[in-house]
Image (cartoon, rainbow, N blue to C red; front, side, top):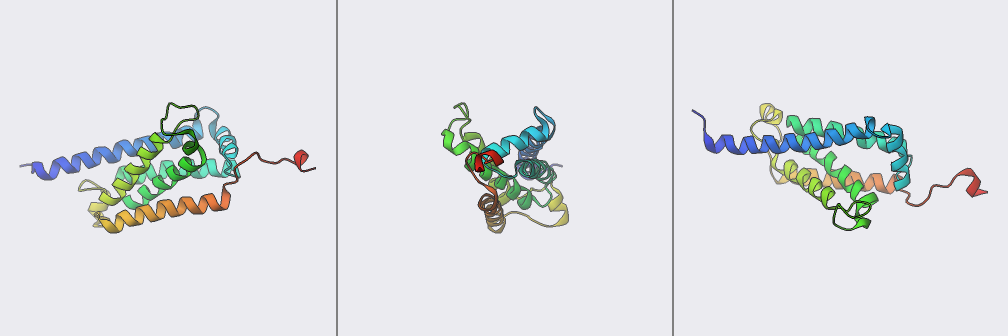
Length: 178
């Protein structure tokens, strides 16, 4: 006999994890293989002031894919969620915040990034649920500690990345320095 009270929340959490994972994996995959491929993504990151652009294109893409896999499996869930949060905080600050709230505004507003960042914090705090690798391993069952870990690691990692690498404004080439 199936316990409805236990299976419905676990199913919903699994569905939430899988959809969030799919969004991040697809986004990272598209950065590497879609449109302008990783080189075009690198030029775009450079135009945002994340220098060197190609390095950050790879970091963001592999982080999105890796975090998506972790969250999808429910493995080290707060760490995968923190990685998702970190990528979204960098995207929010470097690209979306200046464009206002709505995604349909020119340059894309921050509503979508805000939703994904919030989803990452939620899944980090809740944990992977009963149908996760974490549960099978007896780790990361959810709670305040995980919520704080997710938020601190995600926001802290983004802050370090921005402080060290974000240089908004037009890149200077050899001719403009002369």
